[in-house]
Length: 270
Image 1 (cartoon, rainbow, N blue to C red):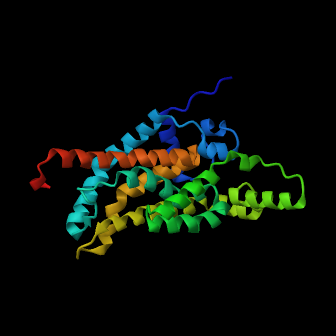
Image 2: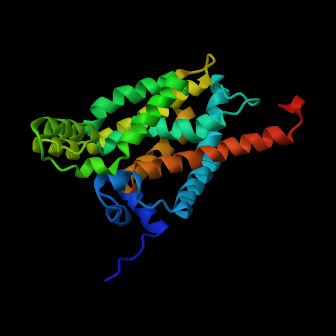
Image 3: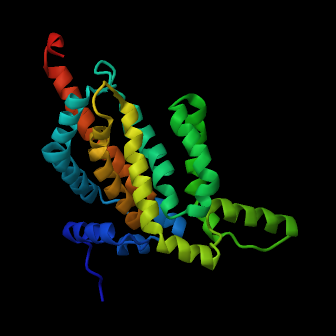
């Protein structure tokens, strides 16, 4: 019996179910991708489906959350730090999708692995795209996406076995203790929502603040909060590579819009 393809409306329905009761199950397409590491990085990435999600997020943000954030910015005197004369294309389309997904969403499925990975990528996040952090992130991604790590046979000398066990711990292959796994599954929703809130709050750094009421400032990052929820669903259901790809596509929309406005309007009007 041939399984029915997962339609966009099926994914949309599953997303709202995920918001009510977050869980760690994958979509059928991702479950057929091979071992766990292959499912993380090499599962099929349907560009059309990613564009559908990006279009939904752009529409919601332009119609609802964008105008609300603009109103709050006016009321609080907050100004975006974006330099219109030097748009950060590489940072928005490559650096941020990779590093922010590693920091805020990679650990959703790999909590043990994130114990060593998290501090490193957090340092890279706050260092910015300088040469040493770029090199370190590239090395980390290269190591994380090695599917061979998930199927290394444990045989041979004691030394070789020790090294392979060490690699299993680093790659997240080694299973959690049952008690810890049950606890994590039970409280996964809290982890997911807290990581999404932290992701949204990070984007407050993009603003210079005036003397307005501070209680309104979280409304400035409502677009990032909603986007973070979709990216969390994408990461859990389709893998980290899909979340990175959607993150990059989503960032390209506002940046392209700003570029068109900057290129079209006379310089004195900006």
